Image (tube, rainbow, N blue to C red; front, top):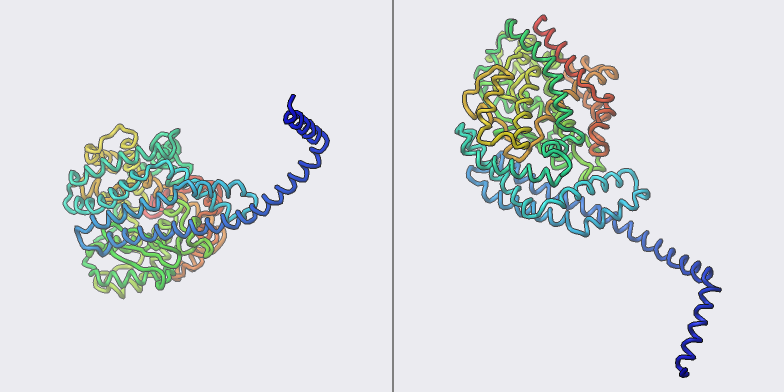
Length: 541
């Protein structure tokens, strides 16, 4: 054997001996050294990751604010026939954010932070969990589809306005067909293991599905339909004074007064005018509500202002430290609607509230309300009678309007109803559920803006919100004097209770936990009991 190989074998033998004799010493020292390095790197990485988390949330806020500003402008003051440019801007901004948010480095950041969740405080942990939920969902949607859908819904909103004005569903139909197709496709991205409509419902009210809603609506219909029939046999209150001429300019001043009574900070909450009222909050210090003035219908704008003011009150009550993060705003559509409908109906249509504001109302409209008493006004705005328009429906018949939309959405997304058949099916259900004939598409399937914005699965939140609100009122009455202060026009106690139980928490809890925190586990019977008691008293049943 050559000299080289002799040296090589000797070295190999020495290495083998070294591995047998010294491993505990070598590996202990080596492991301690690298653990030290890892600890140093981890400490630095966690701080850097949290800085990146803050930046990610600031960017999300900025993109949302830009898109919201475009939407607000388009629905309020933008000239007609200007949707194309906004649609392009919405598409580009939506696509840019989608690319940034679904980039691999975002996934790596969120995965890293989830791996260190035990080192995060509860607020940070919740932020990461929600962002990871969004990331997992959005990452499944191709960027080009995300952009296409954003532009489609922007364009569809403008077409919907024209179609509604003309009462022409066929003008809107091609857009609705595309929107329905997108929703079915997106539902598969959201959760391929769920029925498509269940996946969409879950995005608006987590934990809700068709089985739950079918049971909820069936129980509700069983209680309220006989009540509606019994009321139909009673004499209806006079509502003619609500339909006298109420100049829009005086209604605008009345809106300012209503916002003042609600305690809305006008330095941070504006009001605009639109076809279909909505609320948009950039942050707690910048909320915008909208309304629509009908000069022959005082109650329409009055209660839309109170309703949208309820939404704004929620958004403006979220904790300061949650602003510009994933925790700001209302936690779900159902909880959000519980607040808007709480102020609109449970407070706004109550006799104590109407008695409190009626003297001021009579100052704004002395000729129109001459000879009218607060009690007459109370009965008029609580008249229970099947009607055509959801946003102007009374509390008792309102859930039936939601059931019509729920049935149509469920079948559209389930593939058992074609878009072209929506007007006929809408009209049939209105006759079956409410006993009214729909005269045209403007008073029928074109009355709401939600579908033009792509929102399938939203409508049930209105009924759930009403039910949540009734249960919240019952709990509130057990804690504080509600009606004494309300009767004096003071809503501060009501708002303080809601803020403590609901508003301040933003997204820190899941929707069901928010409701439970405020008033215990959800019980839909409380809502049915509330409706039965109120309308039995109103109509002497």
